Image 1 (spheres, rainbow, N blue to C red):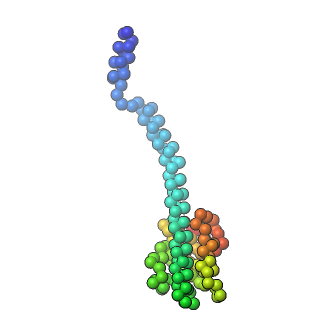
Image 2 (cartoon, rainbow, N blue to C red):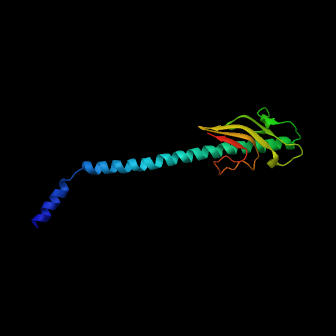
Length: 144
């Protein structure tokens, strides 16, 4: 009986955490941070790559409207009535090979910049630009 009373008194007097418990929590949080931060960085970079590719595809689709209206010269940044914004595209153009009328024949060339990601396209068709791939697909020269 005496032991039970003493144990209850000891338990009531314990306040706060020991240094070991605090250090254990800090170590666990540090391990989680080491794992999570690079994973989040990769997700952000993948989103930027997909966004850059989407910008290129949108400009190819705008060029398709331009050529559907009967134009024959290259589609570039001066034709603003066919697109709302070029996104991160810089120094770009879309060309149409002679005799082809489909969207898949149009070729996009230029740089698309999203954050710290720069993708350089050279004569990339809409089929060459695969949103799920980070690798250098046909027509894509450089991903920095």
